[in-house]
Image 1 (cartoon, rainbow, N blue to C red):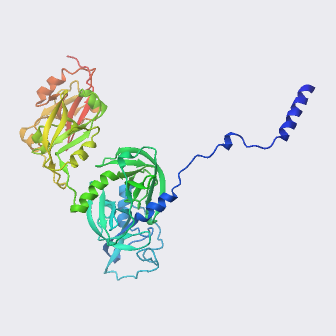
Image 2: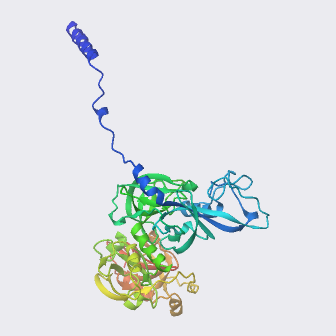
Image 3: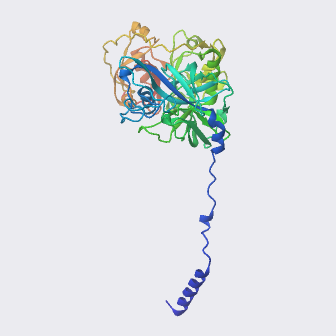
Length: 505
């Protein structure tokens, strides 16, 4: 380094030493504005309640080892419902048999040991809820009060009431109970249709019996299909067993959902929780309060999702609607002319974007109402008039099905399946009008999961009535285009897109 350079370096060092120590501009940037939930919690917290249920059990069968207010019955259900795993064994804890146990509210009022041959009232579950009206109506989840002999509601001021069950709707997992009280704090009902993905939300409840626990997060998605009747609001709010039935609240202090489920592969919270939209829940609650039950419409069809492959193979411009997999004989849809393989695009003029839209649209329609469904069949739309029937409780009885006759093997073809005719009496027993049975599957058919015993009802737009006709239709398929097969397996019917293979003619 030259003398000039050394002087420049020393001068710069002296100047730098004389400068005040000022933080870097980037580090001086203000912190991000995070929401303050304190006022919100003060406002809505008093309207959130703890729900405890009990069942009458033999004292000799009582077990402990769970958090206060949590016993085997409902905890097992929670672990099955939320996690798909059995209740793990846990060490004995305070509040379990063999150790002092608090009273109903976890206080010091201990219970005495009962003779082994007596019946005892045992805590069977714990959950959350919120007050709908000042005169004591409370909303919660149906699974929170499943199989309960007695339901107790505890307010934030520690008053406990025995609740009367007003009504339960298992289909939406909504229940309403009533306590004998007046001038209770209530929570404002919001509009779940106005919920925006990314907005802040808060959950208040009793996870594992820890009353009035507050957690927060954001809305992750709307209209999430989990295979249930309702489209859920998905959030990343921490929700655990015991939060069920509690409110999901927006920043305006309005309830927009009922916390109901979580998704987990580990048995713990993984950042995905689901809430029932409050609009759907209130429609159910209003009916339960009025009559103790929910009346829904039905058209008696089984439906499935329309995938892009199915839409392409049927010439539908885009994947939308509800794919009809089966039609109940003599039901409203059957009388209207709906057939398996039809795609329902509209109900009373309202678009059916996904398969989960249709049950809610029909369910919200009063039985006896004359309605119109728009279907897609063989490349064109049709409007069919249908009269809505009343949905009845699910029946477990299944139609008898005759054992398939030993198949007669046939040569495989462009689809890679060998088929045989189905006797008329067997078709009748299966409640089918037509179809052929798969005796063997390879190549294209095997790759898409078709197997021996499946029944092919339709190839493309052609209903299949015999093995001979099936071979004829298959021989004219274009290997460059996907074709949709309408296939029945067991009690389920669905479209299966297959790309035919080239065959020597």
